[in-house]
Image (cartoon, rainbow, N blue to C red):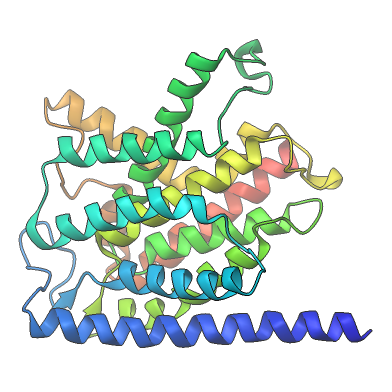
Amino acid sequence: MVNNSWQKMSILLLIISSVFLSSFFTIFFQRLFFKKNIIDKINDRSSHKVVATRSGGIAIFSSLFIISAFYYFNSTEIFDFSFIIPLSILLVVGLYDDIYKLDFKLKFIFQIIAAKIIIDNGLIIDNLHGILGIFELNRIIAQLITIFFIVAIINSINFIDGIDGLAISIVCLFLISFEFFSNSSTSLYYLSLIIISSILPLFYFNLKKEKKVFLGDSGSLFLGAFISIYVLKILSQDYLIKFEYDMNKILFVLSILIYPIVDIIRIVVLRIKEKKSPFEADKKHIHHLVLRWAKSHFTTTLVITISSIFFMVSMHLIF
């Protein structure tokens, strides 16, 4: 009973400290960016009409890093620190792109480097779980497929970060689903709590009417890499889906990441058909189409998030 009470107290403290630190860093970096005049320029592709900074990602990362480091130096590792390197690479690359703009080819190269580091830390897709009749994969094919998956997931989260609250809503939905459908509390449970709690303040700053704070490429690339790590965990032997919800693991991933997956496939096909670069920004994403109908970012985010939940539930009922 005492242990149970202590566990609940430690979870509560973890949530409170994550929210506090994220709020502090969000305000700190917002003021710093305004002071240095590092603001998101409004142009013909912008979905917003107010001044904003792209500093949300670095605030979330700072909160995660400090809390994880605190636990690590107190002999309680809640996060494999070996993954800090690829996450930091993508954070810095995204931050540089937010401030100075970076050629998409260089961004792509850094994403591949980060993907290879993640693989070298032991996460790899070496089994397709029967998709197309394929199970075990040889090492080279497994590495190539894993790099493709990681880079695709990173960019899928980056691509949907076009309106207020959407990318962080999808990330939170994924993390909640990851824990809910697990047969037991996963090794990433506390990490999920930190990320979700650190994201919560950003909803306020992201959806407010003035002086907004956006996730930025620093946040979308880093969170995209995070999601890819979770996906690789799902496809590993360690992650077991609850018996009553059991389904093919790749279909399971598809069910909880349906929106970013469909959006990135659709937009890449459209851009290639129009003989444009797949990385050339435009306003043809699904969320832009919904926004024209819904008229507000909040409603658009709500519609897409609810639709994603509906699809996920439907997939589990069908399969």
